[in-house]
Length: 284
Image 1: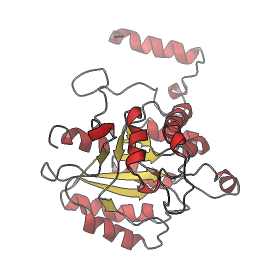
Image 2 (image 1 turned 120 degrees about the vertical axis):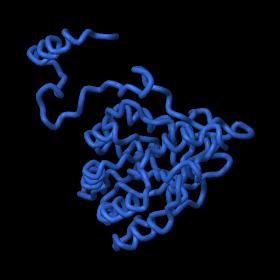
Image 3 (image 1 turned 180 degrees about the vertical axis):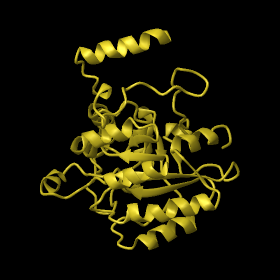
Image 4 (image 1 turned 180 degrees about the horizontal axis):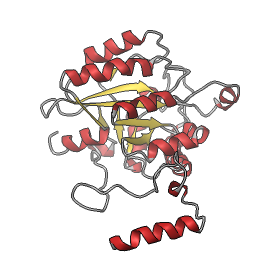
């Protein structure tokens, strides 16, 4: 609905004076009112780009963008928390990393955050803040962070009949936490998948997103080593996997402070995964 400009100020004043729940009118740290950002060509949001299912109806896997269409790179961050880690969070373990998100904002780096549903339940205010910030996009990293295959880094394994429901439960948890438009992208826990997992994912309409650069930040203690591994691995169109979890990736934020300026000095531009996939459509 289009509202004439002369009515906007009066309408906002009326809402705030009535004490409505639009806290954005007064609270300095409140997120902006939830409304879709206009696209470049239209006021209506466009559907995020995805890859059509492959042979036999299996979900497609995206690992990196085109190597020949500019020096772009997507930084991605897994917000991991498994379904059984609630007691550890209650005991004080931190599975979030607000300082990392603050650094991305300060440096104006767009990024894609793959968030588990359980993480969103534990940190709903952070999930909502990230999900409503146009600098970021939130994608699905399962609800439970249990493995979709057998033998995946010691993770508990989901049975075949629980694969698709786990993906759908994550989207529900993200919506309940206040993430308005979770992207139709899915990252398998541990990055482990097989034909059976791709078949289960396909009906959700999500594109599986992997990576071509491993940061090595999980359980790392040397920020310089993490930064060097990323800088040595990035090529045009790369997708870098990192983590947004203080307890499991304590040096990631410090590594970012080296990675971002050095990649920019090399002429790289940071984009979201959706932008890489959009640029890839029609060129595969």
